Amino acid sequence: MVRLYLATSNVGKVKEISELLAAFDVSVLPRSSTLEAPVETGETLIENAILKANYDFALIEGSAVLADDSGLFVDVLDGAPGVYSSSFGGVEGDDSRNRSALIERLKQARVDSSRARFRCVMALKGISGQISTYEGVVEGTVYPFERGLHGFGYDSMFIPDEGDGRTFGEMERYEKSNISHRSRALAKLVEAITRDPSILL
Ligand code: IMP
Image (cartoon, rainbow, N blue to C red):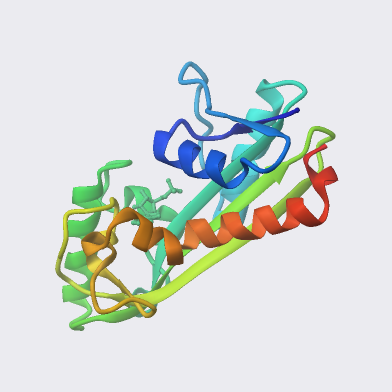
């Protein structure tokens, strides 16, 4: 059985990915919390996803690694916060500050809303070192207000085109997962493994 280490210790992500890969001869393992995290110096999601996959691959010998990077890209802000989504408010990982900063920037831009999209890139590094990447996107509109208590990050400010007018923050987890950038990137990864399981080796 191939051991696939995720470059994340986020329990939700580990669970979702394990479920989707259950049909394959793969055991999905979380990132050890004792490992130091790499500095994400990339200027694109793809660069950061590859950087994280390479970093963990070097620490964990003889296993495949799956890393992901994601963010929200707002048209009226020329794609910001984008690759810097997790620290847009000045404090890494502080979702509430990040949302406040985005609301402020939308107000400064004097708009009631803007076209936007969440993007996610997954980078798989097989045991032999070969890398492949997969991208998922969900299009929608971002607003300078918050609605809904579910989810995380910018969920409460984003209404996907494919929904019924609710923000991601107002949806149940499974409803968001049906259309999310992350599940779409994962679906592409699963498709690729189905087509050619050797990408894990
Ligand atoms: P990560 O690369 O998955 O850690 O995501 C980076 C940042 O992008 C997060 O801290 C959030 O601010 C934002 N983000 C990514 N995916 C989502 C999502 O599904 N909902 C809301 N915010 C997200």
